[in-house]
Image (cartoon, rainbow, N blue to C red; front, side):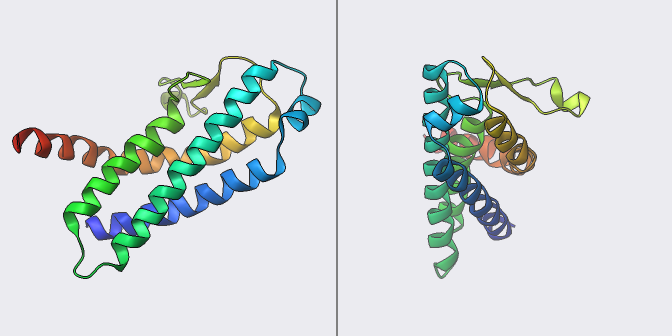
Length: 158
């Protein structure tokens, strides 16, 4: 089961990395301001968060590749990796540390997108996040188990 989840997360991260890289390679601060005049500092913060997410997802993808190549399959390392991906990628997507955006937890009940912006953003940023949100939500639901299970194991080992 852990191996199949690592494989599924690997596919998800590969797609996420491609989406982030494509957006970041095509977007500049100037192009965002041209698209929608707004708070330059806020746009800079959003781009910084997206770069960080891209790096976290890329590192998670690398970790998944290493684990899947190992023989025998390292179940403990895989669980730890899934836990780290949950915290670095999934939680950071929905609630970045500097609060550039936040998750409206009630949105899940309404069928609307849950990412809410502190200020208005260009449509290209909004579209990127909407495109990624569903898969991030799906993987979050898959990995929530590892978050609680890994913490329980760490507490019990102390």
